[in-house]
Amino acid sequence: MNILMVSAEMAPFAKVGGLADVAAALSRALAARGHDVRVVLPLYGNLDRESENIRPLKKLPPLALRVGQMVHDVRFHVRGSTSSAVKIYLVECPSLFEKHGIYTYGDGTGFEDSLSRSSLHAQAALLLPRLLDWPVDVVHAHDASSVPAVLYRQNWYAGRRIPGPAGTLLTIHNLAHQETHPINAVDTLGLSRSLASYPGLLEFHGQINLLKAGILGADLVNTVSPNYALETTRNQVFGCGLQEILLSRGDDYSGILNGGDYETWDPTRDRDLSASYGPDRLAGKAKCRTALLEELEISPESGKPVCGFVGRLVGQKGVDILLPIMSRLAQDGFAFAILGTGEPRLEKAMREVAIQQPDRIAFVDNFDESLAHRIYAGSDLFLMPSQFEPCGLSQMYALRYGTPPVVRWTGGLADTVTDAKPDLADGTGFIFTESRPESLLAALRRAEIMFADADRWLQLQAAAMAQDFCWGRAAESYERLYETAVSRQS
Image (cartoon, rainbow, N blue to C red; front, side):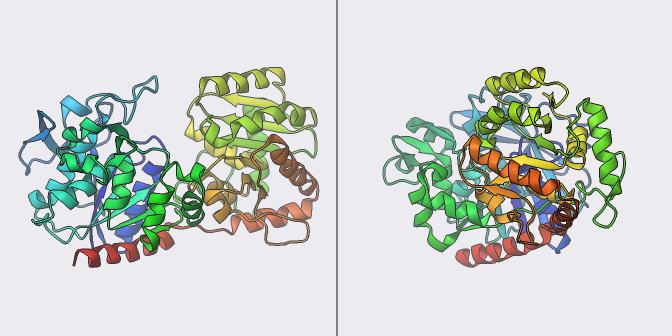
């Protein structure tokens, strides 16, 4: 198939969160299965064109595209080689994309012209197949910012070819990000105002809502784990107000578990580690633990575990329920290696806890991917007490590194971690259900007991490292969705 990916992010060069990793890994997996995958992103102002090998696509002329009442100059660029398995095109538009950032300014404030950016990105993406004489089987849009591609396919290209059948799939990576705007913003999109009035696709409680429109407008919709798909239709909190809209799609809404990037995250060949290791040679993991403790200048009590956390310090990640129990556990001999940035109040609280017990708690408040690898390898437990987690990749990497995760039963965490109980041999981590400090503490106490049993702990590590969440399985599931989307257009 010819697959056109429309995404605001793609690892490693344009990344905010998990969407970037998925766009890159899924594209590679599909290309490996013989598909022609082409990804279209904005050319952001902070991208270093020379180091990223981004250059103008000379065979395509400059264009002028209208967004609302403004006309913008546009030019296509390509990253890497056009003969690459996955072809990456970038849309240059200085008047919209010259800012440094993908969604927000440096202080976290969202771009005021986000809808204009999404509109132009989508317009350019749908023009590219005709300019390249490349018929499209599927337009795969990722998250709310790419929904205009679905809407333009349905409205502007309803009576004319893109070319190709161009079935549409919308993948929701995080339902909380919906892109809502005032009703009159429909003019920016260049769509009929009737779509912004009930029962139009865009109308939602007196505003326009891109994600709601994409859910109803795409041929098929999916999210990034089976359990999160269920949660978002059963619960108003997880559904973020769109649960009834999702339910209305019936079997056209499903969950496909993301895969892990095992090329980057593999302890047998990870260059960021002081020693490599695998399921049959765990001595290297012990060396990684010693090296991490020396690097961060922390020391657990003998026989007590080192707990790692790598992620955003935000409410979603359960930091609020971790903070109240850290001092108590540190006094009991636990050690903590915390890496992340996020909400100022949580950063401040984490910093204060670390200052109180510097020999047991290390907090690094920046993004350091190399250190992240060392925390995965050097920790005994990996903490993911998330309030909600559409899929999660960290628990997959923790498992691969033989670091049993401690997770709340939600979203993709429930799909990937099996609770380790004394009478069961197939556990891979520790699960708790209630989003309360006491519930997380109970799970850590269970882990502490098992950690003291060396033979049982080795058995747990072996079971964890045997888990394989490869992208090949996910790519096969996406293929089936693509086939259905194409049949809808036929």
